[in-house]
Image 1 (cartoon, rainbow, N blue to C red):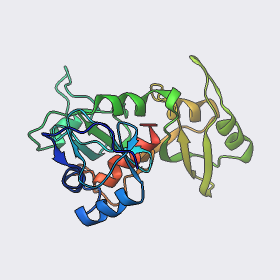
Image 2: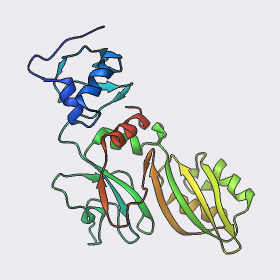
Image 3: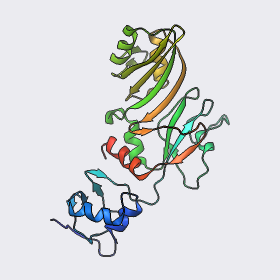
Length: 246
């Protein structure tokens, strides 16, 4: 088992990972013995000390965020709130919904008329990967569209439709419920164009009545009430890291 260079003045890795919420110290020790933990790319031995501000720790190949300065919050944005840190027009922003001391910022955008999941963090690297289409992290929405959306239109939405800024990338589209007055559709996209889903449904002749973002990658909105927020669990942060290729 390779130990690699150790930071003599650092903390024992069991303590650091337990504090990060990965597992209990005893469980971390078992993970070390099984070779599931690496520091700076190398397997470690029991008793290894690390510097949480410099060393890169991976569990099962996924990086573990260790900095105590990093913060992650999930907000259920209601309609009428803008997704920005500051609004020059004085409108309510997602930042107004939080009561936290640490400075964070919204990841990506969700237009004022839409609602649902917004991630706020000060983890710049994660934020960049979650928003850039090249990393392919999907955002999932529940779309209430006007009229009875036919199978032909669903296929077009999944394949990609022509917008004024180009053809959209392929999407995952699933029919949830349909009646003569409206259609409920679940849709996942990896792009982040301005008002993209609304424009896509306009293009197939079925304007959106209501749009709710239900997930950001593996992070689910769940039963979080509108205009409220919660701190992400360590396992949720790690799942976002995995989804973003970190």
